[in-house]
Length: 307
Ligand SMILES: N[C@@H](CCC[C@H](N)C(=O)O)C(=O)O
Image (cartoon, helix red, strand yellow):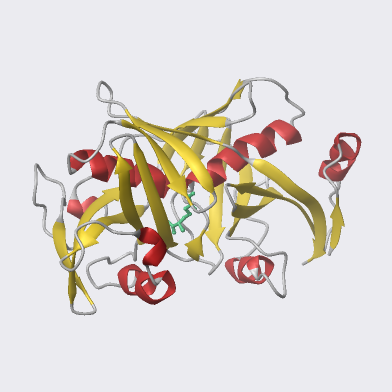
C-alpha cells in the first residue's frame, strides 16, 4: 500500500489514476467512523467484492476502516448512487457518516468548491447532503420508519403503530427498547430493569452489543444505540453497529436515537448527540417529518493498494 498526504496540488492527478490491479482510494472519516471511498462512477457494479472489502477494512492486514463506500452513477435522475459494504462484508442500506464523507469525496472528484448540494440514491431512498460554508455537511436523512415489519423487528408495536419502550430480554435482563429504521435498523435503549438511566461509559459494549445485534427479534440483525440523557437538548451515546461492531460514531444511529427519545418524551426535537468521536447536531422536524443531521467529514489520506 502506498500513502500520500492530502495536498491540494497532488489531488487531481491522484484521483485520475486508473491502473488495473490497483485500487486507488481516499480514506475519510466522520467523527472517527472511517471509510475507504472508491471512485465507481463508471459502473453500478462495485469494483470491490464483499470478500475484498473485509480484507481492505482489516486494521492489521489491510487499510483499516469501518466500511468501503462506492461513488456510483445516479439513477432515477439523481446525481449519484451510493453503496457501502460494512467491515464484515455485509451491505447496509444507508450510512449517515458515510454520506457526509461521500459528499466531500465527490466534490473533490469533480473539483467543486464552496457550498454544494447533491441528490444521492441509496438503499434507503433519496438522501440529500449539502456541504456548508464551514466545511461541515448537513444531510436531509429522510423520514424515519416506525412500523415493526418495515424496521424490521418481531417486537410488538406498543404506541401509535411504533415499537416504543418494548421489553427485550438480553442475558436474562429486560431492556426497554424503541426501534427505528433510518433505512437501516436501529434498536435504541435508555435503560433496563436494573438501571432506569444508563451511564454509557460503564457499559461492557463488546459483551452486550453482539447479543442485541443477533437477537432473534431482529431478522435482519440490528444496530444498537445505548443512550444517556444529559438534558432535553443533549444526549450521549455509544453504539454497537451491525456488521462493524463498536465504532466511534454512527450518523443513522444518532438520528434514530433522537427520534426514539422524542417518541419517549425525553427531549426536544433539536438536539446535540455526543458520540465517542465527537458531536452531531440532529433535528427531527415536526412539519414534514424529515430528519436532518449536521457534522464533519475529513480526508485522512490518499492511497493505492494491489487488489
Ligand atoms: N456508521 C453508519 C452506519 C453503517 C451501516 C450499519 N453498520 C448497518 O449495517 O446498518 C452511519 O454513520 O450511519
